[in-house]
Image (tube, rainbow, N blue to C red; front, side):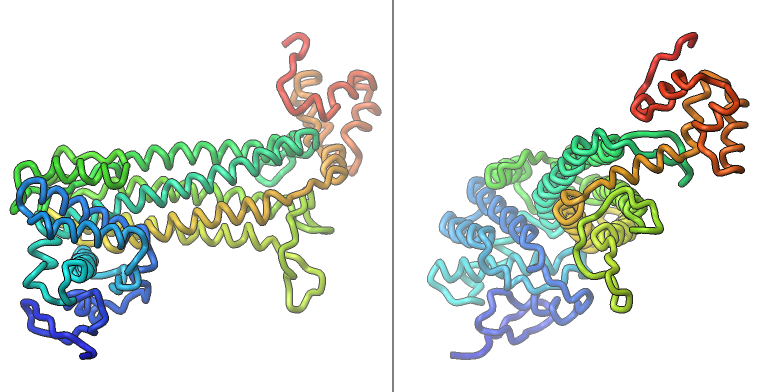
Length: 469
């Protein structure tokens, strides 16, 4: 058996490995694009989405009398195999490629075509019986196939991200309940502020993540709109008048997603605003996760010379030179994920801005950036929840000690003795090292009973009616 087969395109002929399901255009792309070293096979949902698009197109073309039923059935069966996970190793093109995704589209056309040829009893490469362009790509262009498949893949990835964020939200919420009775000092500008509970702090983080779950869900709604039937620039050239409606219906049946056709295909083919919006929301998620991780690192700093209000679960030895040192490695890695996501958002913004006239040719790097962003945020959320948050413990005595020795207690005296007198007491406490409690008693500003009631930490973590106010 020959080790290769000869395939031809408009640029000439090439030797394609005999066992390959891909063809000459995929091979050219493999030679042209040595960019990331990451092939399409690294993103199986994108390959599955491409197979769904090709499947829907074959069914639509057959129903409109444009494609022979036998060919359509073979294409559909091949698409189902690819969608199930077979032949993903044949998607060899680098995810970052020139040509607006043409190489990705051709990779799908060729793999599906050659598998369908086998099902029809022919050899791979015998395109006179079934053609990757004339049949598998009928009524299509890269410019509607690629973004439609990208949207489908992103929807599926985003659902997993939302689940991971919900898992993290619940982990913080559970800790909020566990720490509801732990009195600690709240801080603003890294300075003592007023008392709160550790539970309030963790619950606030839970709410922050919950808000972002809603924002991601809203951004996801924008990418249910697809542009199948646009063909090259949105005019629908070389497609049947009923093709856009029909292929969208078939794609909804196959994916069970509530996909809708864009009301203006010319606009949809050049506008990548939905990706900018989604990327911006994901950046927001990253920024807030990083802020939370900064807080976890601060609150666990020490153990002897820092705040030391909480203990993060020890995950690994922290130093090759300092015995016994344990570092906050999980918050640190989530911080780094956030930095990467912020950078990827810049990439999406620049790539979207670089679109010219009727097409944005930079969609491959937009896709690559969004896939990386969603996957890293999903994994970071799960890692933070399971390897950090769920194992956090509170140093209750340390938290209370800091509250009782804090100058911030004086804030509670404002409604009773006024701002000026409270500030005077605070300054004296700072100068002498004495406690607010003792100085108030020494000066006879309030009785012991009044002072104990006012400065009871439990009375300072929620609104309280003050007589005369």
